[in-house]
Length: 286
Image (cartoon, rainbow, N blue to C red; front, side, top):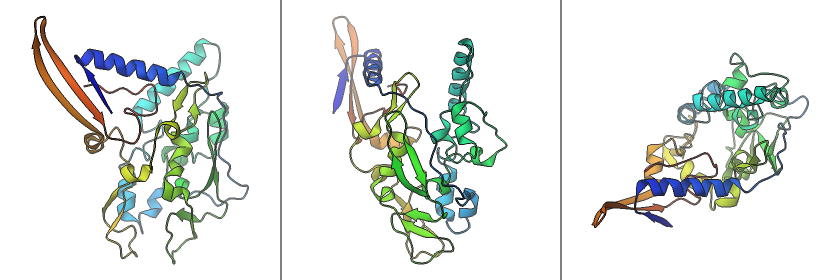
């Protein structure tokens, strides 16, 4: 796949048109918090996992998942504040429905999503973002047309694609973590209150997310493991320069014509999905 344009500006305009077309795919928006059974074991802080999984914890600590809450992501916070301002102009109280994926462990997640409570940076389960205990306690994904919902286990066992035989806590296997399907809980089927699709990776992507976003890197997965590598939990994306270098091939040539000089730019998308991906607000500048 490649796009050739005679000027940078034309290329940017084409990108904007592509995103506008993507936004035309609409779904009826729904709001739902995750299904956490009554009496379920409480979430643990990710820091606790670092004692046995130091390499993985270091990855996560530097990832955008650890910074997903509006308390740590200034861009996300700015969008939330604009939303609140727009709602106020309409005489309405804005809710924080983004909590479903940006603060999935929040104890008051239902109240955040329906607008009866506001984000509080002093609550660690908000500040933690997408912590270890959330992804590794998912039992299932319930797909909706506007927002997905995760089902969380009750016993607090930590699931993975290949659980160890022995561990100081309960463990279990979940194929969602092997196939990369778990990523689709937040990275697909999302629509805003106007029904505009804001994340549709499952529809536009192919392959296993883990192949590129959780590549193997040096370091054992735990202090008890005999393995020399682990799946990276940095989960790099568009914010990562190494990921961007692998995602695209860019060629440029200057040509002289009667009217002056033009620049021919060829961009080859090497990812298994569109670039930039899934979200109509995302843009790439050459």
